[in-house]
Length: 85
Image 1: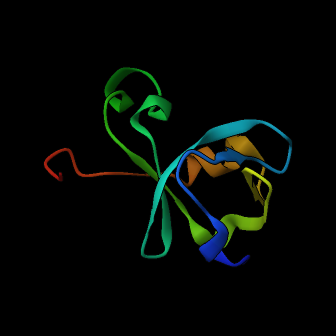
Image 2: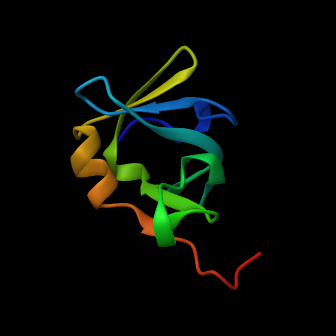
């Protein structure tokens, strides 16, 4: 896992395949919280998702690069509790 201290708000999160996964809202514990704009469609829309920091391969410029392809990273996302603020 890369050093999470370099991860900042509004950085792009990119899969190992170069596909955009999301945009950083902030780091919370051992997860990256993505912005609601990257929440997907249907019942996923309108709330935050999280990517485990363990998937971060490197922080480069204004991008967080993952060790997994985008489709795998998205399948590992955790949804925020709808009641959480």
